[in-house]
Length: 118
Image 1 (cartoon, helix red, strand yellow):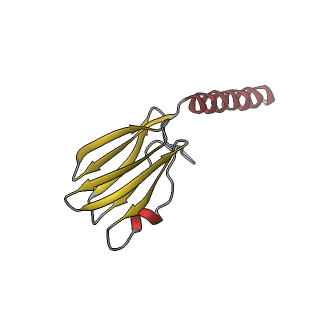
Image 2 (cartoon, one colour):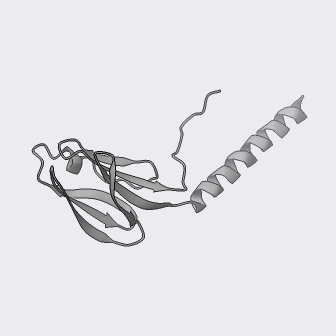
């Protein structure tokens, strides 16, 4: 019985170890910008840039630095997009509702889960 428990514990540890090593090697690659569901652009996260995004609804300024993305300026009335902070992981988004703008990090990395229940 003890041998079975030790074997299961070792198998679980090895599984988690290799999964974490695999996720470390996969990095988010791009940040995609859409307005009303239409793709406006895709930008690599490796290149630092300040990008002005002008749509029919207004102007936002997106800042990419060291794989981190934020909105540093916007002419919307509430500035919630600027208050959403910095995004760094695949699947994270910054949304500006007045400008109908969605900024999302995409790439191979999966989002992190706290618990998986089956």
